[in-house]
Amino acid sequence: MPFLNPSKNFSVASETNIQLSKYSSLVLLANKEMNLIAKSTEASIWERHIHDSAQLLKLFPEGTKSFCDVGSGAGFPGIVLKILDQSLNCFLVEPSKKKADFMKRTASSLDLTLNIAQKMYEDLENTPFCSTDIITARALMPLSRLLDLLSGPINNGAIGIFPKGRSWEKELTEAQKKWEIKHTSFPSETSTESRIIVIEEVKRND
Image (cartoon, rainbow, N blue to C red; front, side, top):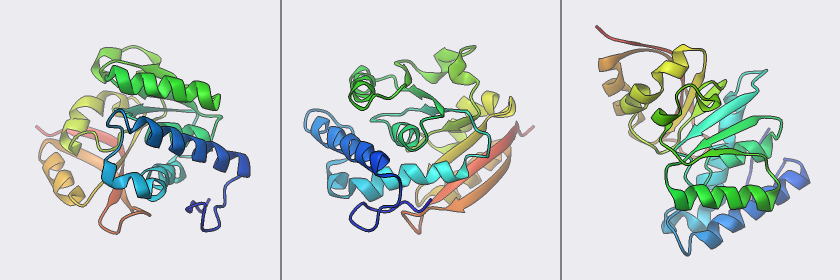
């Protein structure tokens, strides 16, 4: 599924394109009142946020039914992934009330079924938010801290899919001091300096 700026032969279904366009407009409008995305990235929202989120779907294994996006913020990547594949059961975790409320309004505006928890992920133990097929987290915290938070669900069968920026190698090296990690890294479509780290198993080093 090539995913391109709509001004350059956008290739998903037209109704999906419309929903993504509406979503980007909602983000930009709300960004005037709250800090959803950096002001410097508003003009490049399609590449920096929507495309950057959408590429994760290509890494979902066949048969994936559910995912949880931790620290979802404005809904990147969670809402983008749900728009692209509405068969997925989508769980979004965001402790900020303003951001969680924005996602709830967005769900209503776009007629999306989203499960949104305005909580910290660690407070959702033994709920469906912690038993999904996939866990995503974008620009949330360094990889070592992500594994402190998410190693339980990963070792219970979830796959972690974490986009990382130019410091990805340093983050991975630091994480490997604490964790034995079964992982694969994939090039990002939106930055030659970035990688997407897919983690299948983790084990704390003795």
